[in-house]
Length: 198
Image (tube, rainbow, N blue to C red):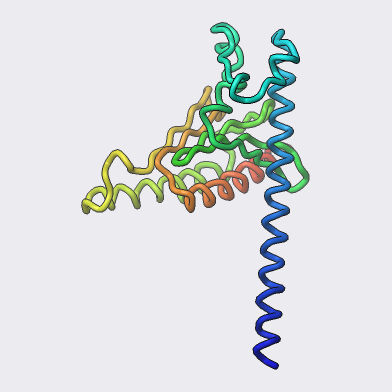
């Protein structure tokens, strides 16, 4: 009897795990559809015809004219370069930033109108000092002891315009670090946004 109840407990736990995964994938699908709509609307504004937008992806991945590429660097160009785009939102659904993810890198671009200042806590104290710098120090030690190739060392670059964060580029990250960074960056930006509003 106890074996049966153990099996049932395991099945219930497994069912919950599956439900959570389905929810996550559903949420990701909705985010990707929203991103696609946003890209389509940008292309339409720039004078592309609807027929060109609706072509299958293999045909549609034509680079826009040079001046368009300069004016709209975040449009179609990144969808081919990056494996996925994750929207970082507050608990109330406010878009904080877009996260462009590849197999081993992240690019964080604050949402339009979100002028995050590097001096707003907890950006420097938490995200830079406790998360990014620690990951870099850990890899630096691995390189020093010969356990990691210097080219594979974790690195980051914060692109600023004055004190305003324009993007954060992070290189040489594995899937575990990507998960940790997603959650740390979202939490940091949400706290900064709360301070900006008050």
